Amino acid sequence: MDHAAIHDLGRHVGETVTLAGWLYNKRSSGKIHFLIVRDGTGLCQCVMGRKDVTPEEFELGDHLTQESAIRVTGTVRAEPRAPGGYEMGVSKLELVAEAAPDYPITHKEHGVEFLMDNRHLWMRTPRQVAILRIRHTIVESIRTFLNDRGFTLVDPPILTPSAAEGTTNLFETDYFGEKAYLSQSGQLYMEAAAMALGKVYSFGPTFRAEKSKTRRHLIEFWMCEPEMAYWNQDDNMRLQEGLVSHVVQTVLARHQAELKELGRDTSLLEKVTAPFPRVTYDEALKLIQEREGRDIPWGEDFGAPDETTIASAFDRPVFVTHYPVQAKAFYMKPDPKRPEVVLCDDLLAPEGYGEIIGGSQRQDDLDLLEQRIKQHKLPEQAYGWYLDLRRYGSVPHSGFGIGLERTVAWICGLDHVRETIPFARLLNRIYP
RNA sequence: UCCUCGAUAGCUCAACGGUAGAGCAUCCGGCUGUUAACCGGAGGGUUGCAGGUUCGAAUCCUGCUCGAGGAGCCA
Image (cartoon, rainbow, N blue to C red; front, side, top):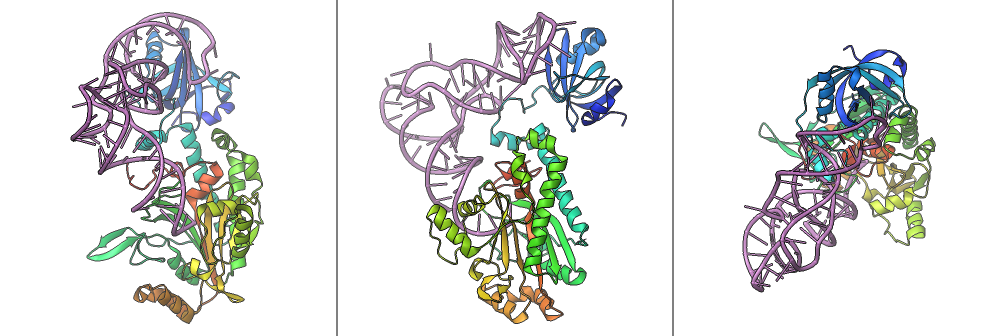
């Protein structure tokens, strides 16, 4: 590893360095070749004059195929005409591995299906690299934020015997003759972990066999699920808004170049600072009625267009709280002051990106929880261990789940979550 | 599962009842500062599949397959 990284070229002006990368594009004027090299950190224009290299190297530069692996040695100089502001005057060109001449991803437009079929190669383009770098920073900043506040990472199982919320959307598999399912949420296990460790979080893949075909859905997606013992719903929401603003501000601080590559309007992200506005379910109903004239019967959940209506009334993410009991999961705790609603929140991202967080205070009363399990006709024997958590030292506790891909799509300003994950699992797509 | 739209060269598209074309990509040639470079030439097609209507179908009709956008459900 004796090569320089392209994003560091500014520090090597006047020096002779070697770049190790791939040929991204090439232009030629007969006596002078412009090789655009990418190395994963950026693009560099490498200028090769006929007199600067051997005739063999010059001929090689003329016939290099797109995505051929090459090492290029030369002198770095500032050059306003070059993309990135620096270029290399080439003195040596080495072919590491020639690419076949039929590289499918060109510099013209391609359709979605073709790009997804070639995802393994599409990943190499600057736009996709920018998204994956931002995804990395979002993951890292979520973990750092929680680690700095005394949280412990706990990994729940991926193979599970039952579901938190029904089994229709679960992937079933065989577990030595028993039915098992891929996890669609680690939450119930995280509640057990919170009773052991206090403040915990999980961060991993979850699976939903939903026949959903929208810009916000993946079959396999990543979620971070914090769970906190002795925290009430207000503590919970304060953590959520602190987390989301920290993540957004971290991306803004580190990734101006990537956000520019994506064409993201960063002024909208700069406003994302805690505290976030809060509206109750009832207030949201009224807001939708006033803005759109739609009357939603009390008790019904909001649809995607309703969420967009609510979110567009604010300039930063907005909490919607106090949903009707019947619209939400069995484990949520009813509001003691208003038992027909639960202590919960959905955090809606701006610009129509929809729900990125769902959280609640959990039901900590054994009898009331058993009642709700019966009402939902869930298999009681499967929840024996979960009920034990209320039997042995039950305390108020709260938690939430933040969807990674929706968060990435929103911060990057993408129109579909399929670009936010290296290899998207979509309805009817499991290749590559 | 439902609604809407679509499928033509490797890619993006045109031709809309009468001989399937363009740009890009590929290959060959030209050009000493190119910026998705440009200029000239070449190769490249059972028009998604199966039927039907017609003198004649990429084009009209039916069914199927696959894809896109959305609904429901969710993060």
